[in-house]
Length: 119
Image (cartoon, rainbow, N blue to C red; front, top):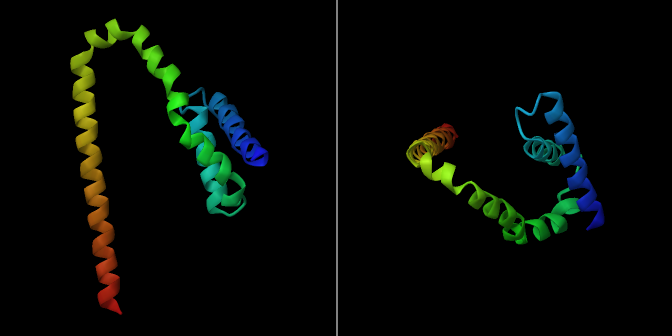
């Protein structure tokens, strides 16, 4: 489990370094997880090396989200003042996400049917 934790932290720190180089345009944690995902796909990192640590971290996700949730409460007044733009952004982004997922699913289902009929 220590090796898995060190691997995850290494990719996190690598992502943070890259984020600094690109002026923080993308959060370092996201970049680090993309690097880890890439290494898992290329089989440079074996899933078993990080599985136990990943299960532990995801199993305790509520513990990690509590400080962020409490932090939001410090800014409740500015959030309430901007409730309409926030609500519009949530509705629009959710609708677009559902639409994109539906289109991607239709594309892959159609492609799979074409391959099946081509045989």
